[in-house]
Image (tube, rainbow, N blue to C red):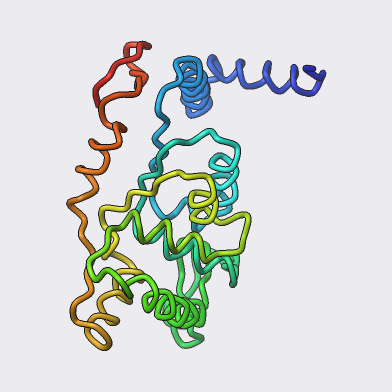
Length: 230
């Protein structure tokens, strides 16, 4: 049943199409998303780590939980910050903060967000325990397996990795060795097991083998039609 509030929300969003500036782009995005659902298109959600740094992390987790997303493609920083936020929040700061003063206090800055250094100390300890199990039987693993198995260890309903693992949504992270996650994998290999490694080229092979690149219809936002290629 459609409520009056839902009708008003729909009318407001539709009005964005003729509002101009970024509102019009939002209306176009809504239209594309609706046509994707009508065509049962494969929905790839791609984003960089700033989405997870901000309050949009919970929105991404919601989209996965409710079945709006088929595939995630993201960066190593997204994985890093998603795991940290399961245990320790970021803090609101400001754009004009004194970087040197923050450094003296052990605080890192992401735009107007502050991240105390103890978050990364905690992450290193958490990941080292995870690495022991993750590399126990196979020394060379993939970023997708890394994201899935790491998500399975998390206990936070707002975690993107947990929702992806729980709902069978693959996470592709070609640059897993970037950001703190990559640093800690490198340090772990240097200090504990020189045989471990991450194989990234299998991502394209896996995408092709599972059919994500070829078989399901993908909506072309330019033509408004479905097609069976990238």
